[in-house]
Structure formats: structure tokens, C-alpha cells
Length: 207
Ligand SMILES: Nc1nc2c(c(=O)[nH]1)N[C@H]1C(S)=C(S)[C@@H](COP(=O)(O)O)O[C@H]1N2
Ligand SMILES: [Mo]
Image (cartoon, rainbow, N blue to C red; front, side):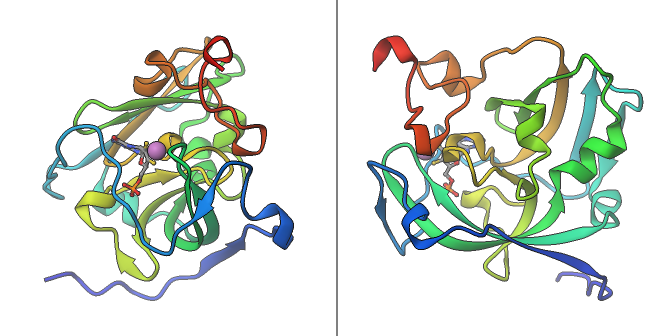
């Protein structure tokens, strides 16, 4: 049974894109929601779930599920582009904006890069700037329903303006760094940034 949540103000954010900028080059639209995971789906008990903000920050901390749920909430409507060429348009993601968590941690001025860590060992690297984007969200709901485990429940990151391998599932924390380090797929040939509009799919030398 889930505990009823008190209604709280939720910020509504829409990724506003003209029709000709909905589908990046080389992508096709699907209305299904494929599952793309390397390895098994980790199961995380909410009583033991923790989200760690660490590295080059003023306020290192570890949030429990209750503490995370008490943060200001938002709903982001945005498209989702996998590098294997499918795009799912107009998803609604509800949760806590990444910028809210960054503000909690207060990165030091030299912390321009972030490694996102996950239960199960997956990682992905991001520029702090991409986490601060208005539509970057840590989501626990998708299209009005609690996020299913195979899609990253209890909590995943969603970075709509980058390829979906950056949208890490089963997140366990963010590490703030002063140098760019490659994550799981970035070590294996995926682009360090992954802008779908520039088709930043793989290392430039593999293109
Ligand atoms: N922890 C973790 N996060 C992950 C992945 C993964 O294998 N492990 N796959 C990534 C890839 S390649 C994609 S396309 C999206 C897919 O999300 P979905 O399975 O909810 O469609 O999750 C991303 N996040
Ligand atoms: Mo992907």
C-alpha cells in the first residue's frame, strides 16, 4: 500500500518545441515505451534507499526516501530520444528538478562536472550545466503512474535534451567533480555529451 501524499504545489514545465524540432535526425517515433537496460533490474527497498550528494560540494548529504519526497515537486513534459534511434514524444515526468538537488548540495565553483551513480553500478557523466537545465528532473512518476522498476523506479534521472543513456535509472547519487570523467557507456564508445540534434552518438573518431 502506498501512503497518500498531501497535495502540494507542483511546478509545471513544458519542453516547448516547434513541430519541426520534435524528432532529431536519424530517429523514428514510437508510441511504445521500450525498456533498455544493460544487465538486470535492481530492486531497491524504499526503507534502505538513499540518495547521496557528494564530491566538490559545500553540503555533502544523504537523503532518505521520505526526505526526498518532502522536496519541492515538478512535472516536466518532454520528448525522450534513445541512441538506438527510437524517440518517445511528450512524456510527463513527475519528481524533483535536478536543479533543486544541486541547490541543496551547493557545488563549489570548480565543480563543473557531475557523475551520476546508480544502484546496479551504472554511471553516466554530465556537465553541471546540463543538470541545471529547466527540464532535467529526477522522476518517480511517468505519465501519471509510479515509475515501474524496469523504467528506473523508484527514481531515475531524465535529461530530455540529451540522448536517453544520460537518463540514468535507479539513481543513488550525484558526485560533483572538477574534471570530466566518462561513465559506463561513455567509456565504451558513446559520446561524452550526447546532443541528439548534433547526432553526438559515438566518440568522434568512431563516426
Ligand atoms: N542504470 C541504468 N540506467 C540506464 C540504462 C541502464 O542500462 N542502466 N540504460 C540507458 C539507456 S541506453 C536508455 S535508452 C534509457 C532507457 O530507459 P527506459 O528503459 O526507461 O526506456 O535508460 C538509460 N538509463
Ligand atoms: Mo539508449
